[in-house]
Length: 160
Image 1 (cartoon, rainbow, N blue to C red):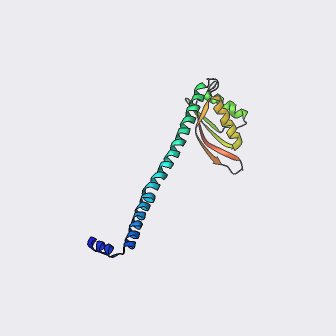
Image 2 (tube, rainbow, N blue to C red):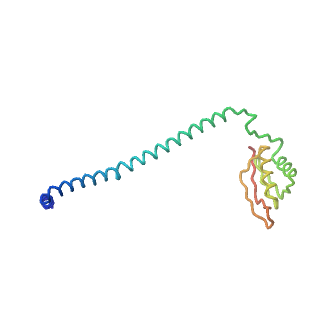
Image 3 (cartoon, rainbow, N blue to C red):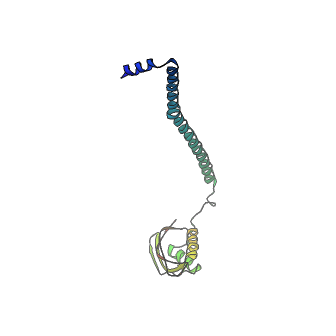
């Protein structure tokens, strides 16, 4: 096979042989450029961009860490729960005009059920509970037939 190709090549005219050699060099260069160099160059560019983004993120995180470290205890959100969990839940519920269906305390936790409450009122109440030092562990809300009102099947609160 190689001998046949060599014989075929030698039978070509001088001009055709030069043209074929130049074409072979061009094909090899094209393979090197588009098959190896271009993909490598693209990958390097992508990795440099990713590195730059990661460095920017690291700088931002360091700045945020410094800001958090400078916060005084008075500035950070502190639990200011006065009295028992049940008292806090009852007082904030009555202040927000929420009728609790059932309230079940369990140590540092309490479970609450509400038959019907406006969603916006519920969100304000949960915010006020968080400000008094209670965190929502779990909540199960269902839609009622009336637009904008929900039923709280189960709300689990815990001391912050």
